[in-house]
Image 1 (cartoon, rainbow, N blue to C red):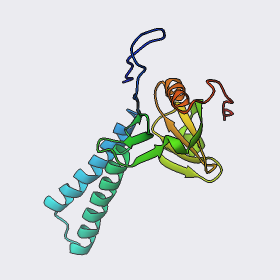
Image 2: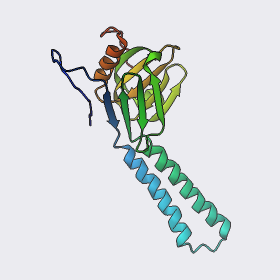
Image 3: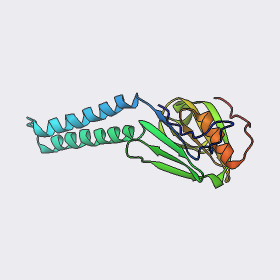
Image 4: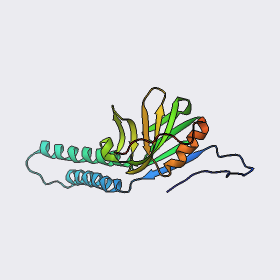
Length: 188
């Protein structure tokens, strides 16, 4: 699903767009969320309908273990089912999941470059989610595919998987008055 706000076109008398929005979704995460809900349901079922005769301690440990594991899996996966990216005149803002957390806001004054990455994979970042790798920087990876790579003034990079990342790169480069072409990151 793509939501890109555009107000004008080349040669149009309308002002150019002041906001770019994009989104990426990973439907596979819903399967993991269902597994988390199943663990929670098992824990609740054990608590409500237990006929354990071996004592309260094993029952309590089983219930707490199932509910805790279910909550961790459920909330850990739902946080990264989708990512929403918004770029305006001041900053790039990334919001993850249905409640918008984790959230990252990067001021465009801190950005020295923007590149299109045609192939970002969870494998190169160590999985889905909000990731940090010393040799690569920080990333929000919700699916495999195209992404946006920002080079920051302090030497770090920030990568986010988002649909139509090339349009985001053009939008950021226009805002920062950077050249429209530049070096592309190497593919893994």
